[in-house]
Structures are given as C-alpha cells and as structure tokens.
Image (cartoon, rainbow, N blue to C red):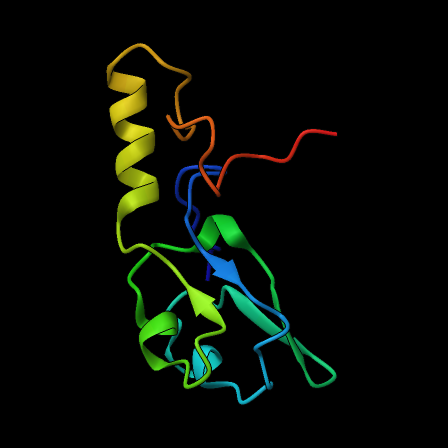
Length: 101
C-alpha cells in the first residue's frame, strides 16, 4: 500500500517520551502507522502521515501523546489561501513549525 501523506510539517502531534510507558495503545489505534516501537520506547515514525484524528491521544492512558484534531491541515490550507507559504503552518510559534538549526 502506498504511504499516505498530508501537508508537510503542519501536524500538531506531540509525544512526551517521559510519560510514555510503551504500552502500545497508540500503535493499535493509529490508522496510518505514524508510530513505531523501538525496544520498549515509542517513536514517531512519520509525523507527516498523521491525519490528526485524535485516536492516539484519546487512547493513551498516560497522556504521553497529544494532538489537536484537524488543526495542522486547516492551518496549512488557510495559510496557503491567504498568501502565506503553501503547505506550512501559519503560526510562527506553532509547535508543528520546523525547528531551525
């Protein structure tokens, strides 16, 4: 199956590795295999595959995963319609903005 991708670098998905116990609940409910388990720790495999459905955050018993359902894609679309950079988050302080080096 072809890997599904949405807008690049706009998802609000966050993982607090300090809270994650490796229970795997998010792996079970994620429809796009965004997460992967390495040893006993969860990692985000492909952030851009997240469709922000919220299933991971709703089912994490330790509140290690958070996402604002639908916000990233909406921000990217609105930004491109209002003359901003296409496919990018429109807020400079947004948690989904790419990190600068």
